[in-house]
Picture 1: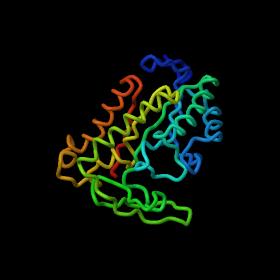
Picture 2: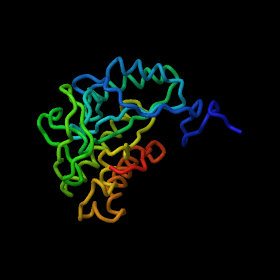
Picture 3: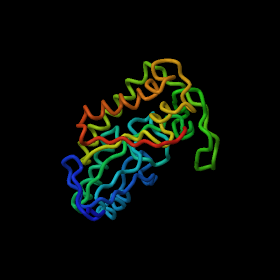
Length: 231
């Protein structure tokens, strides 16, 4: 019977064991959202895991929702991540990049005054951390249906950039109350268009995003994170 220390074939990617490092927000990128040497050292130290999944990595400026979170939408970010993946592979590790859009759970003070966006004009519960302290989440700007294909495209582009950066695969963050999950949940999505109402419609953005990501790389190199929770 296999143990967690036995190898595992992940659709052609051989993992030396079945221990996975789950994505954990680190807030160790630069002020410009570029991966740093500190991040490189963090992942290298954990490269003996069978597979590591990075912290949430924003796919655009609009996706920005955490101070000092890394991005995957500019060449300097690709170059920064390449230093991480090269070091991880040299240490014998395997690493996926978790791609992410924060949706409504952000704040204008870290976005140049721009409101976060979401499926409906409903503020998230809880509060948001700023350097000056914790503040309430704002009511987001509602995304127009015409904007959603562009968001899907940012995930496809980030997938291609992650491949260029040397990752072994990517994961769509569709959980934890972020954008795709916000569309899934009836607590955050009260739309009446093609992306609201029945679950088939609320799942549309996540399914379109996953499809675009697999077309940008391959189905074997794309995962989706889901969580059984209400946004």
